[in-house]
Image (cartoon, rainbow, N blue to C red):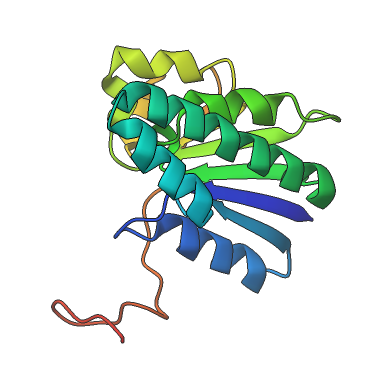
Length: 168
């Protein structure tokens, strides 16, 4: 199966661990980090930011989303999996939803951001929402019709038993 994992490079590494897990299950994986951009795009964003921060973010997000769209056209994913669901700008979801042959978009929220009303704008783009908060998933109290519980886990290649132990 071809699986596209879309994430955001940060200290949590969720998308990296999820992509690694799918690879270990013998899936073909396209791992795309929305903020791991080409140097020219970083320079462009910094230059525009001086004049208008919001425009620079929206403009460069659109370019990055188009890049992801083109990569997905070539890769032809069966599933698009998005850890850190609500930290990905909506433009990425909009373009992914336009891919031919209707791809299944699965998003995972591990930060209990489901309770915030402004996240309901994502509902039309996410086919399956996984919530690390069992209460939200079990009681269907959020605006996503297809919500399931998926608990957080640890990558044992990175973390190991004991107090504050991280493998280097």
